[in-house]
Each structure stands twice: as C-alpha cells, then as structure tokens.
Amino acid sequence: MLTQKRANYLLFKRAFELVLRKEHLTPGGFRELLSIKAAINLGFSDSLKEAFPDIIPVERPRVEDQIISDPN
Picture 1: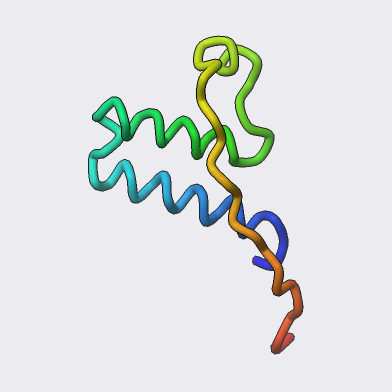
Picture 2: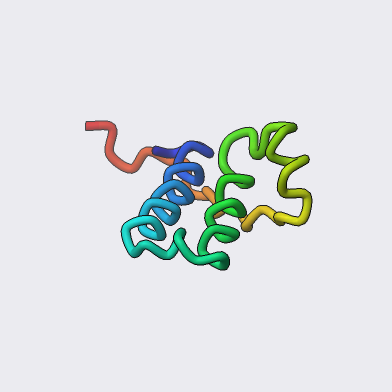
C-alpha cells in the first residue's frame, strides 16, 4: 500500500490491537478508539460528531515513500 490507504490501515491496526488487549472496555481506551475512528477515512459522521463533540482525532501516519521499489 503506497497511498493514504496505508495510513488508514495503520490506524485500523492500532484500533484492532486496542480491542485485542480489551482496552476499549475502559473509558480511556474507548475515547482512544473514538479518536482513531475520527482520523480514519472520512472521520466521524454527523451523528457521531453530535454525540462526541469533544473527541480529537489522532494524528494520521505520514505516507511519504510512494515509490515502487520492485514492480515484480
């Protein structure tokens, strides 16, 4: 993955690991999960923005190296 899809993947992986460790069951872990969701793809829907107005999206990973090193 060489585009911004890589950033979405890395954020999804981070959220998945949070759920695996069952940290999403704590108030802090749930807020972190919401912050990750706010940064993925289009972010929060209008209803989620209304329900959680104080959630700040996490910083998206930078995808800088977009050169295919070996096309095979």
